[in-house]
Length: 96
Image (cartoon, rainbow, N blue to C red; front, side, top):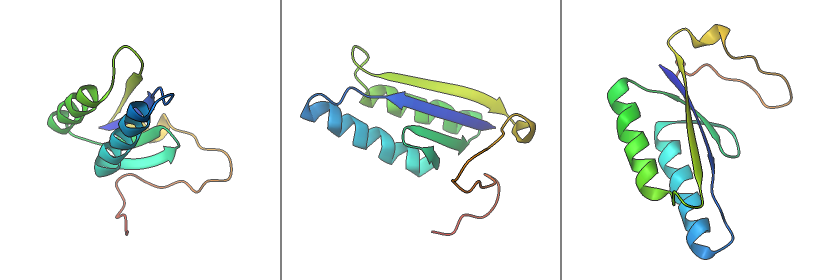
C-alpha cells in the first residue's frame, strides 16, 4: 500500500534539529522524498507499523507532529502531480 508520511518537527533547539535529521533518514530507508517533509512509501502492513513505531519513538510528542495518510493499493488514481519536480512510480526500480 502507498503511505504518505508528513512531519513537522520543532527545530528551535539542537535537539529538534537532530530529531528532524533522524526522522528524515528513517523515512529515506522506506520511501521516496517528494517534498521537504513529505515521503511516499510503498509498505506492507508490518513495515508500516514498524516505521510508525520508529518515528514515534524519535519525535517529541509535545513539540512535533507526524501524519500518515493511507492511500492503499489503488493509489494511482488518488495522486496527481503538477509542477517542476519529476514524478516517479513507486513500484518502478529506483537506481541510486
